[in-house]
Length: 316
Image 1: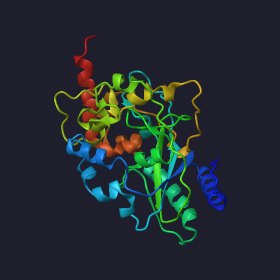
Image 2 (image 1 turned 60 degrees about the vertical axis):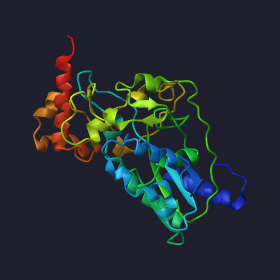
Image 3 (image 1 turned 90 degrees about the vertical axis):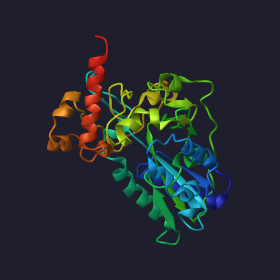
């Protein structure tokens, strides 16, 4: 339960927090709507070309850096998180799929939940709201950190002391004023496990990811042939290495939260050969409704072929 010495305002915040948890979110935080404190860092990252060819990140920059551009007179940003399964039960021979992508597409799961929470906030239209998942122009990790859902780890992800980093983020911008929740201090300390473990050295420095080196970028967002020096390290879609090695995800006291039933993992393919040999209908049977379809039918086959090539090139 959120505590804040603001009387009736705190009562409305506690009500909101309880409602969010009641519809399935794990936790909620509130930040004051303003220009992102990391706006210049984001722009510098873009200017350096580390976004690779994800040109959509260069559009709507004014809205992305300041949520008040998306909702006039915005006063509060409500951030929520929704856990997904951290379990990995694929056979060793199977190509790996990032855990977040093994259940139903989180956009389809979270949008109705955010709409529900937005309706609760608006009180039948009394207040304006604009909700977003990661497809909207907003720096959701910045606001998740500022609102106290966690801190931005050295792997660039939000880390929460209770549940680690295995969760999605959603946000609601509103012209309704709520008390802000307390920001959490950084708890990464001197740890560099994520930087050391990244198989392609894509974490070029703490909290800075060069997409041009990142397996998640190559397997999901890149279109066309992979470059000759690309290595996927058996990842068919996405990559979880920097999360797998994080102490906040592996510590004995980590809470394993309930998972929304639609986010429960599906059975992955048994081999890269199964992906290559699949017809379009079989591909849909395996992945329809999941984030994996973002790569496309030919893109996933490309990834599977690269995995087989790397396997054949490695010493026996």
